[in-house]
Length: 219
Image (tube, rainbow, N blue to C red; front, top):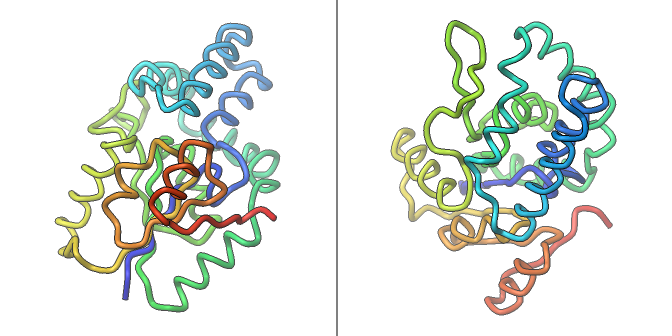
C-alpha cells in the first residue's frame, strides 16, 4: 500500500475552484462585484506566479462566508457544484483515482483552497480524506478568519507531516503526489513519486530538470 496524494484545483478538476467560487459570488450579487473581481483576479495571478500572500488572499476569500448563514451557504454551494464544478470533472482524473484505489492505496487530497469550497468537490470525486485550509467557525458560523496553518506551499508539508503523525503513518512509506503548480514544489520534494499534472511553466521546468513524470488528465 502506498499513499496517493492529490492537489485539487487544475489537477483533479479542469479549473480553479477557489477563483471560480469568487466569480460565482460576483454573479450572484453577493459581493461588491468590481472590487471583489479585481482582487480575486489579482490574487489568482499572484498564485500562478508563485508569489501569493496567502493570508491577504484569505481575508478576501473567507469574508463572504461570514456574511451568510450556513444554510444559505450550503444552498449556494449546491448550485455552484451543479453549474460550475460538474463541467470541470475530468474522466481521466476519476480513472487515476480508481487506479490507486484498486491498488489499495490510501487516498488524500491536499489543497490550499478552503474546506467549505472543497469538501463537497472531493466527495463528488470519491475522496473523503482531505487536508484543506480551515475557515474558523464559532457556534456553527464562519468568522471570516482562518484556523491554523493554511495548506499552502510549505504549509502543505507541515499539515501533511502532522496528519501522518496523527494516523501513525511512517514518512518513508511509498508515496505519490500529483500536482499542477509550482506552489506545491515543497511537498513534491517530500514524496517518493512526484508527478506533474498539466503543470504550469515553472513546475514543468522543474519536472523536466529532475526527471519527474509529466502527465495530462485533460487530453
